[in-house]
Length: 167
Image 1 (cartoon, rainbow, N blue to C red):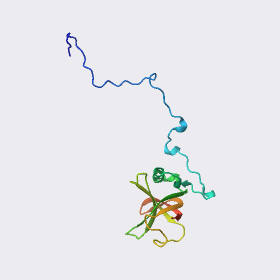
Image 2 (image 1 turned 135 degrees about the vertical axis):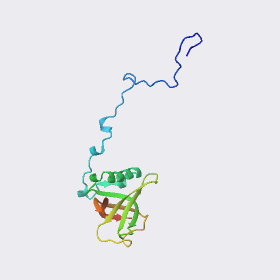
Image 3 (image 1 turned 60 degrees about the vertical axis):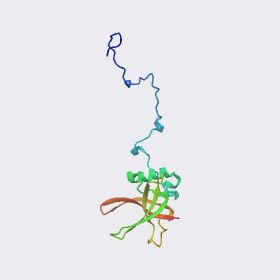
Image 4 (image 1 turned 90 degrees about the horizontal axis):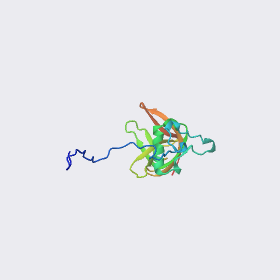
């Protein structure tokens, strides 16, 4: 493109080219190693607390967002929780399989916005029958039980066994 004097000029670009930042102009910001996120396999396992009667994982002390996240982790990385005593608050839910008649009970928790729910099936210690020994669905409950895996119809699932429930 020629200007008024006849010289060839290059039109300005609308967006200047990105130049790599040099070490001199960019302050170095690093996160101390102790504060860096670690991959899941590097996280410490929960140490058993059963000798003291306390749960190994007490979800009742966490915010709703953290409880939701921890229950998600239990489903995503179940091996970290197998054999651990879990304590959680939530709403009682029940499901009866119409094909087999099997009754499944669960403690359901909601995330902070109450748009999503996560649940954990539980089996009470001793002999119990539904509905006689259980609250109405939707009742707030606290459950403490041992996290365990089981297989049913070719699927692996997880539940709390030898559980105790309070309203």
